[in-house]
Length: 203
Image 1: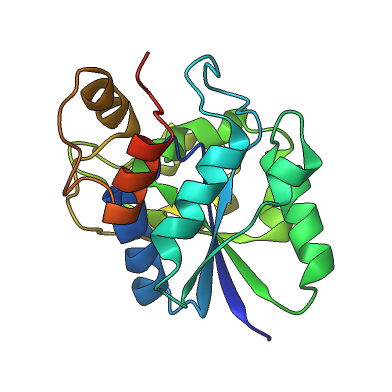
Image 2 (image 1 turned 45 degrees about the horizontal axis):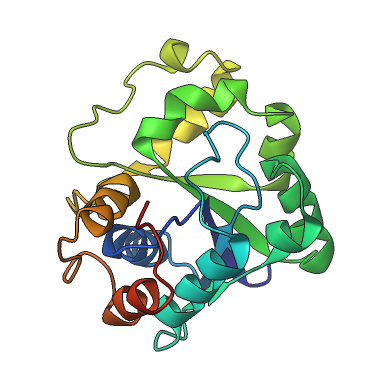
């Protein structure tokens, strides 16, 4: 088995300390060699109207992780364009890293949504999952709750580990910026500076 690579996808609109702590928790608890943070081009399950341009989200991520060699930014979905389907991203990453152990990182709140993901059965053949609990979200306790075949459901529940309680959301940060409130201590200083310099999230 080759390198153990974590994959953390999202809109990162903007990236905040909760994202980075989640990546660090996954890296430590699942003994990952590195974690790729993958900003989507267009999210399949979210309203994209409040989405900052991809170039800005990518630049903020790169600024956020520049001092941490264990975290990397991958523009794979932005370069591909269109709706960002996880299965397509994993196919590309599997082709690029055929010997790697690919570990897709999700929050426990996403467990019950997996059955709606495009080609979820294929996804299970391309990677395994790292599931991190989040504050205020009770993880599923019964495989039947997930609506997936029992072997996959049991593997998912066995992959649930506790994470740090970091109650920060990108939507709250956007609201604070629009209202002229501080976002210091919620995002890395480099990201706060980038948001201010480029006048993001003011409307």
